[in-house]
Amino acid sequence: MTHLPLLNAQQMAQFVARGFLRLDGVVPEALNAQFLQEMGEIAPPVPGRGLMRTYGEMLAKAGVPEVAAGTPLDQAYEDGSALAKLVQLPVVAGAIRSLVGEDPIFDHHFLHVTFPPAYHEASGGENVSQHTHQDSTIDPRTAFDVQIMYYPHAVTREMGGTRFVPGTHLRRVSEVALGRYQNIRGQQHMVCEPGTLLFIHSGIWHGGGVNLSDRTRTMFKIRINPNPRSSRTQVRQFDVSTLVPQNQQRPIFYLKGPLPPSVEQTLMTPEPWFEQDTGRLEFLNRIRLWRYLTDDPTYDADYWLTRVENLAEV
Amino acid sequence: MQRQKILVLYTANSALDSPVIGWSVYDGTGQTRPMAGDQDEPPYRTGVDALKDGWRLIQAAQLLPHARGEEFDLAYLKYEFFFEQLVEVQP
Image (cartoon, rainbow over all chains, first blue to last red; front, side, top):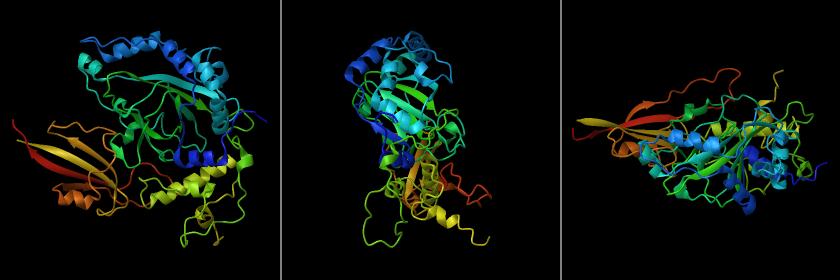
């Protein structure tokens, strides 16, 4: 039994369907200030100076530790540091527990800074957005990692913000192979107040937006794995008392009006970019992920898996 | 002297008159610099609307059968149409 504020079934269904959980302004201002102070000043633009050099020096100076991949998350950060306090915030620890389970593992972290035009002009480089990609590499698991994106200061639309495409996380693609796609209907840009967190499924398609403002934009990312040695990994780690028993399937197709909110309704809500045929396969994949997270191999929503699993010919 | 502008549209099914769900522009004239995330609304409602505006279709994605055992796997966007315009530029 934990006293952490766990995600409820509806929040988990949203994460399963859309691949993200956004918590606006949940990090206290004092902690945002401590984090930015620990990161240190970023050198001003110098004509002829390459941006990679500026970035390298910034990473070397910043108060972020080098941490071995595979370290238990609770040992990754020195007590009292801003990053230790961040992952210990009840709202953060509760979301981590809900999404990846007990004793999670630190994978890696990175300090992402996006520079305004003056730096690119000084270095002679081009100021462009990052190609859309899926992090790491092809990942055929049902299990998933979580990435926390932390925005310690306000982000305006002019500053770019992280761009992501809700609902893309169940597609098995190879990193930036999808870089050809510039814009996808329903894409979102992280415009937010200080102390906002974006938890994303490791498969979600995303990229850094171009910064057209007059200041640098900082985002800190932490990737966290479920612990394969934990007895319960990431299964049934959210607040399962909020699950509503499913006594029968909902009526489908022929409806006289909208159906009430439910986990099924959330899982069956399409994204604006869904292709008409593969959008149905997205529903199947969401149901499979819900079966995994709830440890219920018979679960179905709107009959999609029941129909294709009916082996009547056998 | 001519340069090529490329428009890539991703549609909701294999029909060119189905709704656009994704899009990209690459400008060989150098007059504009399209990039990821620069537009939240598609430039055309359908691929046919792009034809009406003078874009020439040069390639369409094939329809391929689904490999046994991989019928439910999803990866890249399926219905991709490449268009071009040839634009006169000063040498």
